Image (cartoon, rainbow, N blue to C red; front, side):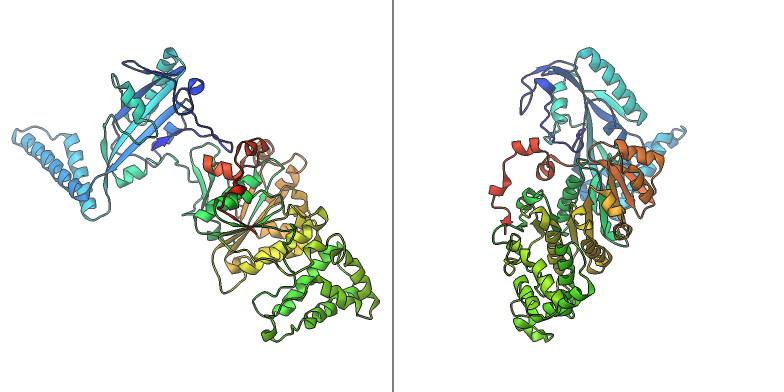
Length: 592
């Protein structure tokens, strides 16, 4: 295992040992010298750790990771078979006991080192016999890099002082410089073979990330702590509710983090459903074999009149149509129009033979045109006025989204519905339709599993009162369906400026704040109870840095961390996308 310093939230390119003078796969040349190597335009020296302390604490190798210079640390681990480990321990105990008896026979004082070693060997042998521990052979090696020999001497002095502070004894690989350099490369080759036997506890404590800022037994890795000494992992499904909000200014990395969390949730077996307003999740969907639906493209529709499984589906669908019409009109209809709309919805269902009888619910559902037809047939003037206001969505410019039945119902472990092809006037309605279609899947009592519903750019829905109400209901009921709602927005004012938006935040046990605009930092700070230091941090945070708040009382600063493969899937940087192949041509995903 090779530990290297990694860039945060940026494209990671191959870094060779030669630095600027290296090629794509390695340095141009290596000059072998007795005490160091000249690699490309730099030099390096390797050390092997041969002495270890008797006891170590958790994260005892973390200081090596935090060293500011360029340092390659390699751990070579080889398990020891239990029968072989038991035999070696018996021999060790026999040697130690023989030494003790020899000292006693000659009248010498007991050697404290032998006494302690004998006790440790006996304890370890007992733990091994009970199956509480296993033995491993560990090789710990360090390669120090510098631009020239003088700088290398100074850097080696600093590293040896650091190693000594950890009670480790390191020796240089003199006359074996090349073997030491190869040993610390990420190739899994140990050419030095200078190893020490450790048990399970000591080996697990060597894990370099020692920070425990959030207590979570599992979950998703969000990144590292700001200091870099700990990992930030959190299981949102272990909270009282599974919702989260991500607030940040444009370009702070909120969509990057949301996609990274979605991808890692897929690793954990969580089904992910995404409302994608800017076509940012397509490459991710293709990479993992997910389903991608282009709402608003020719021939792609979601019929709002489709009945969903559950109790009294006809009434529930009628209520949703009321919400949808209010979004289309930009305001809630007056009482007369609301009554006329209710009659029209029931008449539209009745025209296709669907009644309260469950046996009729399998029949094809009506469409918006049949609703306007029923409103035109109503003698109430309010009904005719409402039908005229809905005409653009039936026979006018916006009819494409409502002119037919549902064309597809995407299935899969990742379902992404894109709204990019919708005109701005239909974005709120399209988001509502998409959220409703995904929520039917979440609320299906016959298919219960952990699910994550991601609503990117949620301000499109929050700016409409009826859409905000629907989002509030989803946030309140997600936990009952074993689902978590992720609300991602760059407009904090729309989310925090209304009672419904504040309720959505209050029902999110996990709250993530990335860099905030100066104009919004006070409102965000007051809403989340941030200290002056936390406000200053969010006002000056780099891309991908932020605060993870749990239940509004436990916070940790973190920096999002992605592997090169993950970064290529979730980045939205135009310069980087221009260099990547278009994964839409792959067959891994399913366009619908």
